Amino acid sequence: MREFQAKVDKRKIMRGKFVFLDQTTFDISDEVTILGCTLFSHVPLHQEFAVESRMVDFRDILRWDVDEHNAAHESDLNWLNDQVGRMAVDDASTDRDFFTPQSQHGSEE
Image (cartoon, rainbow, N blue to C red; front, side):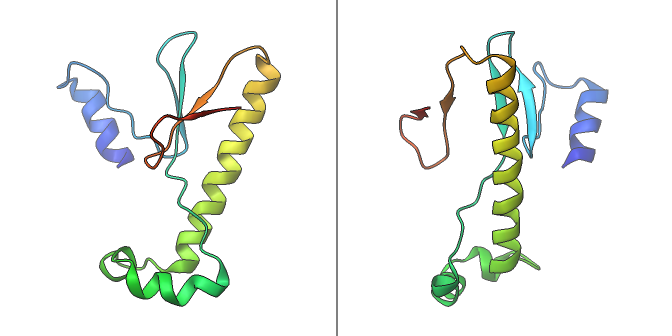
């Protein structure tokens, strides 16, 4: 995906800019920064079998299992916490909204 992003940026074939939001920040303006990551949910050990046997992701995605899924969750969570922590230090007065594919309205902290 990063290679695709570089090709699109180089060719300037789109009116806008393609940004692959995989642990990536993107400044829309001086006031708005997008923090992009997947942030998969964590699968607890006691639910591993049920989740792995029922979710198509674990059948249809090559080399993707609960361990990989949880590792991706941990990586994104650490990255996101680090970014939010930096933003809090840099500009503690700024309001922040958080949105996920599952949220309908976002939440503020």
